Image (cartoon, rainbow, N blue to C red; front, side, top):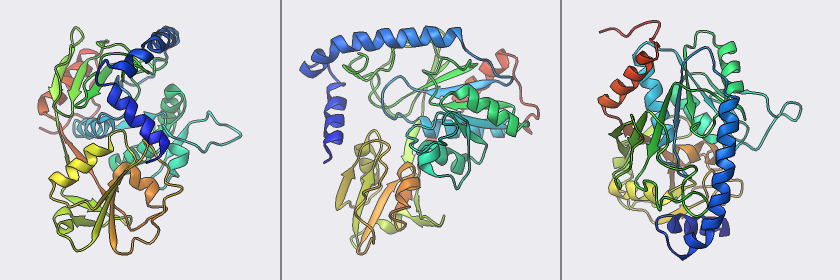
Length: 349
């Protein structure tokens, strides 16, 4: 196990209770909280409002909680309602920038380099099929997207709950089974900011402990599960049922916040895993050793696949699906309508 991953796992385990390690780190969390409060006030003072409504999808805990599938679900719902959405993101994990304009917004295409746009932004572009722009400042990404796609009439900001410089109209906070952990801020706990904080909608992607809700917020529960198929690099699919049995060695790899959750879902789908490889979140796979795939089947997440396929084109990616209750989307529609926002082309009855 890489040392960075070992440390990451120890921290994540410590964040679930107020044990010795968390207590040692608690004084640092006070400093982190002070800096976060200063950034929030500074961002709010400079917040830019774009000419279209903005829906923010994010979370308050470090690591993934289901933001990407939630963003996809929100975009698809908006399309079904008659909106023409676009997505803006920071493009977390980007390592390649234009040296002449490192802060310039970058449009994401289905063929984009994941190291230039971020793995999650590329996955969103491939899965949602709507315009996606990334930039360090989401407002810059939003302006560039609207200039390039003037028919876009609503923006979904992926992982933007702590980005105060872009004014938003509806805030969605996503939680998984961890909830708020031990309730402390980084690095003593998992919280990026204190909870509860003002949001409009809370979506639980997994069962977990009860959460205190901010005033006026509505809470809903979704079901997260694997698709019944895996995807090859060429876009063709293979049924998960065909991967059961012991004909080949099955190796599951995940470079996400909670690799073990992905492995458990594969096992629940009936797959026998001969080896599991947990890697740090947003792992770049530059040193991936398995080049041929001879005699084994490598199974990964969709987020990992956009980078892994460059090194292991034989790998199979299993999509994650989120079943969101209709009541959640009804609440989103009500929040937008209450602010005077309606789609230009209402959905057919």
